[in-house]
Image 1 (cartoon, helix red, strand yellow):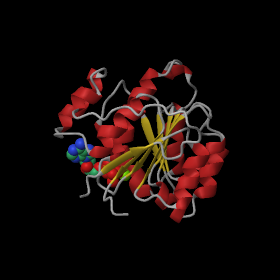
Image 2 (cartoon, protein in one colour):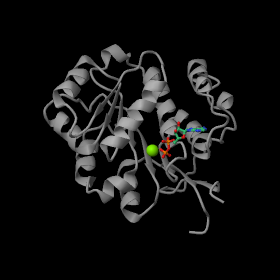
Image 3 (tube, protein in one colour):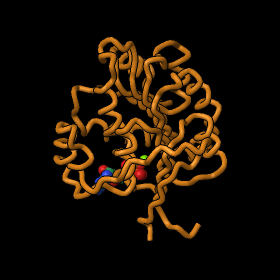
Image 4 (cartoon, protein in one colour):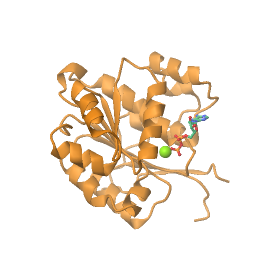
Length: 239
Ligand code: ADP
Ligand code: MG
């Protein structure tokens, strides 16, 4: 049964157990305080939240860190994306005064980064702007968009480091980080670039990690950069 779901504080270091927010059954339940988001998701016409969304949304909307372990095609993008939009709008410092992006999504490949960008563009929310930066893409054009001001940067690790070093992307304004397909990024050797970037992102940020698997390398990465995360594991129980 691929819909088995296990929810736990998998890296908890103390005995103090914060309760885990309950899963939602419907989009209405998930976004009842956010009518504009609810309206957008209704337009798309999905019937119900996927398991990772059903448990991930309440966790992320309560400001907690999330590790989503689930196979490809289980709706992980929307699981982190809709809370990201709400997060951007909910920051105490208004967007115009933030001097840089609020959300950073790091993805392993150009194809995945572009796919996430396409997904972002389907949802209109308070004119939130996104840019996708990746190796092989037109650097000048990417720099142009970044410097005009964006809320969300979707990036592959190499080009991200390049644009950060060159001073075009500021990491100090970022308060919500997504490491998408962390297992693949480690397999591709991106760990040094990821660590370099995260070193400069403020420690009180919210962090999301998605992965299809949970090997020791991914666990170590989560251990270094996440704060008492809730892990949502979707899949077969016969490990
Ligand atoms: P993953 O990142 O887990 O591989 P995606 O987020 O790319 O998966 O989603 C896979 C597909 O499922 C996309 O086409 C997406 O639009 C669709 N999808 C996302 N959430 C739902 C949902 N709740 N119901 C039906 N389809 C969904
Ligand atoms: Mg994905």
